[in-house]
Length: 374
Image (tube, helix red, strand yellow):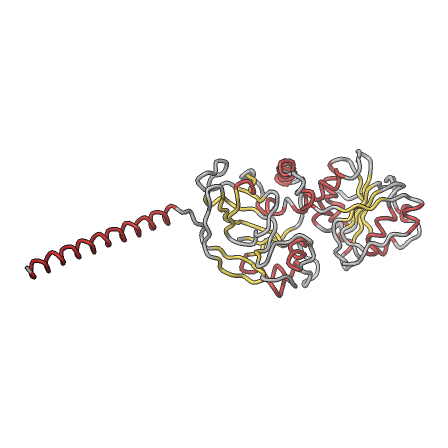
């Protein structure tokens, strides 16, 4: 009986062990099946910063682990993304609205759809897309965001223009349309004319028959710069020193006094814009590259009744303008594709990010727009 009892006990114990093994295997198998059904992005390389500060000091290139692509999300393989002054301002902590740190840099770019979540209907692998409205975290090889954050663009869009179309060209277009009614034959004045926004203002104004008066800083090769801007459609180009006269309007020939001016520099360069404006004119400030305040003579308010306004694209986009924004982006990309909107850029491999950043920070003098190619 003892032997029989021992055999029965062994059989029972063996059965329990088998049952436990079966349950364990089924549980692990289920885990494996669930893991296989979870869509993940590939590992990504990214430029991150853990606190605000000088971009050349706080940014570093790191490896990021794969992340889950949820049912309503799209994983995009990035192709190109620029380094804009606004990107630098976010990293430095200048902007009042900025990502929480640690953060991945970059605010606009273009990529190719790599994979889509199970509930996504409007996108498929291979589609060319841009973040619209622009969104933080573009300086990485794979980006995962909700499907409503992406805008599909024409597959024959020039990659470098698709990467840069939103922040600068869209700013130029909105400023020309949002502050005063401009008709063919009217004029505008701007400083920072060599910037991407400045070049876009010149070209978009020219399409509408609007004259442009452009102010550039004094530097070696300024005559060559003037010729480049005039080739884009600029009517007048002056260095700041040329405008150190009592009556700047005497320098204009057959161009009406501008009712609208754009300032992205501040300091003396902003004062020069004000000197050109007509009675009741408006100056729109959208940047402050000199980091100097805008000083306005009392007479500009009392005798000329000038208005000072500001423009920030991110604020404009936050007012439920996504659909309108996408129509304008398609329009601007069409102009770029047809060669009617152009600006100088330099494509830089991702591995050379910090060299491109140094150029964007002005360490190597005046440089074309730096665009990272992934």
